[in-house]
Length: 189
Image 1: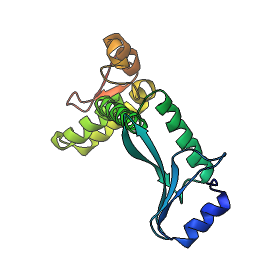
Image 2: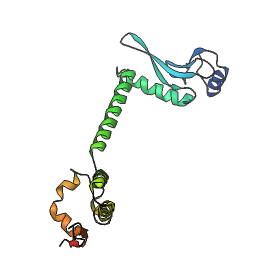
Image 3: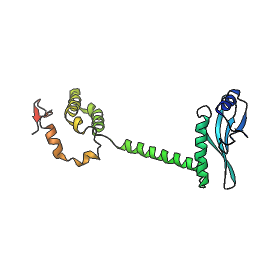
Image 4: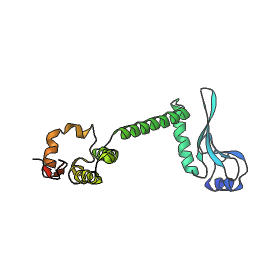
């Protein structure tokens, strides 16, 4: 049987006649099939046998993957079969590992809070308890001017935990902090 050609694949896809078309011949890959369902649906599939069981592995849509790419994917799966590795199970394992890594990263990111994020959450949660709305603006302004440039993007419980109280005193030494209750600023330092 002759191997599929780019022109032949294009013709089969535009025709849309249902059927399985094998990629044989010297340039084809053993077991690679173009499976046409109708004019809109066609896919590349690899037929293989492992441990006495015939299996079909989908390689992607024929509309998205060209003949050369389908052959590359089929050859990679065939190389796994030489080593008695089931390419379907290998793909499932790879996807599961990627999904687990993505979930672990998302969980770590959700737990990793920056100083800026924590401060903004604190101000938002406590602004209703302050007597004057100006206090919340003062908090935000002071943190924006002095803390955020230095430690705003540091992780709470990570980089920030090794800093100690001595780090914060010079940062706020020149900052007037209003809040002594008498309208006079209190200066640290």
